[in-house]
Length: 143
Image 1 (tube, rainbow, N blue to C red):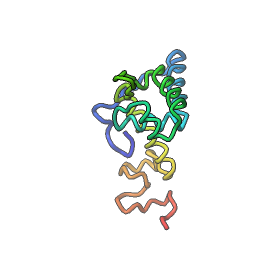
Image 2 (cartoon, helix red, strand yellow):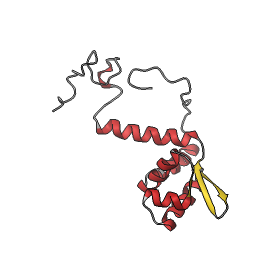
Image 3 (cartoon, one colour):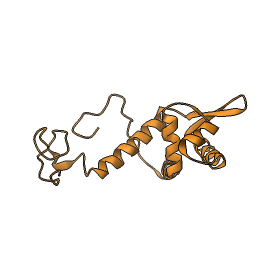
Image 4 (cartoon, rainbow, N blue to C red):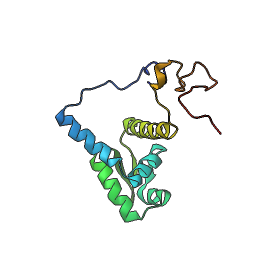
């Protein structure tokens, strides 16, 4: 989607948002509104990780990381599996990774001042121009 490309074959179907599922979606998005949780999810996007190692890798105290993991688990974003004396966490499924990827992509897109709908020029580069030279008049020139 966006940038003039056709939707991917595995694109998520658009489901209408009603009052019932709006509350559930809002709760999930609130879970993503904390930098520490985003760091945990980003690390788990790379693969499963033991809770103690995860806390160290994201720079958190073990107790704080465990608290965030419990919340993420209760929301269905991560799963934990006991292995001996430790619990190894992983993302619940690929949807969580895709949600994180889309959020990161969107914020980077905003930071760069890009828009999928820039002038509707259809060349997919978001510059309003007509080619790869990036000569669109709607953005300041690079310095």
